[in-house]
Length: 64
Image (spheres, rainbow, N blue to C red):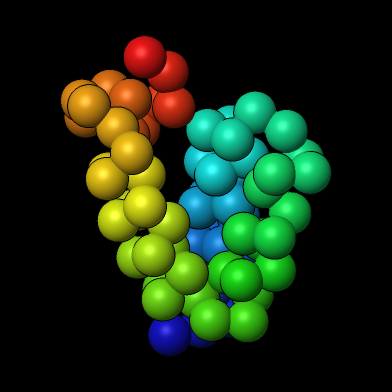
């Protein structure tokens, strides 16, 4: 794993979380968690989103 791979992954997941959450304030704690724990935070976010959503579209886009 290179630092470039890590940075691209963090940026991609961080951007998706920001898009899905709809505000920087709600996404910022998740960004911090991503930097500190990496894939653990991604997994927790996905499980949380899946449990709160009723469809795959809602999980991916955050819309109903």
